[in-house]
Image 1: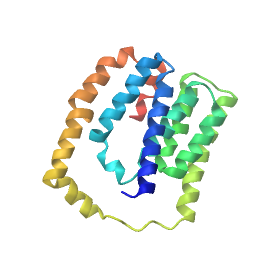
Image 2: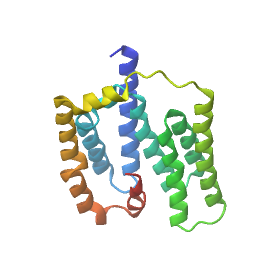
Image 3: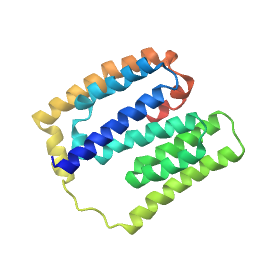
Length: 194
């Protein structure tokens, strides 16, 4: 890894953990919020090892967490700015304005805030469309056949089994289900994103 790549990855991870700490502070005291952020830091190497090869993906959860924080506090302007920035980074940026729209719909806001939420979705779609139309497609660095071969290799199957068992399977969903009724209402309402 080059020095610039390492600096970018370090900065992206620091931003992710800081934004998660900030978000968790909405409901928990600083000590518990820090424990939550550090738990993510500890499990990140196991859960997302491939993101070192696509460092822009480390920025995606930071934008999403900051977007959720802004939605929770009713800061529509920040939501719009984060939606555009996240959409410039990746198509998943549309989840921020969709989360805003869903929140405004759930809280039965039918005024200016609802219109701003709809505009945020449109702005995100326009940003993504403008990028797709103005930029040439990037050259394929790896083909789908190569990805399939990697995923079906013994190393790939071992990594997938570990990740599914730890996070998407037994422990992840069991812990999520066990804590569901204790989760803050806003978090439960935004759980559709997972």
